[in-house]
Image (cartoon, rainbow, N blue to C red; front, side, top):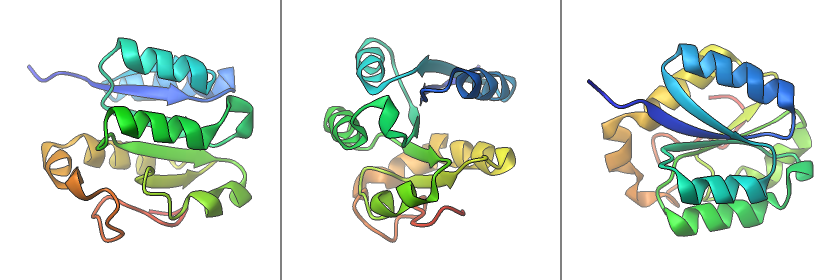
Length: 144
């Protein structure tokens, strides 16, 4: 029996957290949610997390600080960033902390495919070069 992939979902919108949580649960992911970055960091320290899925909204807290802290704790942690505001994508497009950028509304099949790739043992073995812009799981655009 394989272990479920644990996803930490960080989004200030309760409806988004609930909807994504339900969709990902159907896809056999275990989702733990946080509505801000402070709670996310606390949760990350208390549970095994395999992938972080976070909203780039500044209402959640200091995104840069959170990304830096998470990757300091686990340098090869897969991180998927999402936002409904296209202008938030550009500053993160070259950020070595983020593996994939997605624009809301999310394309759910693309999200599921992305999570499957990031959770695969092959991907975990390839993640040692996070800052490499040619990393096979990196996307520097809102589309995969």
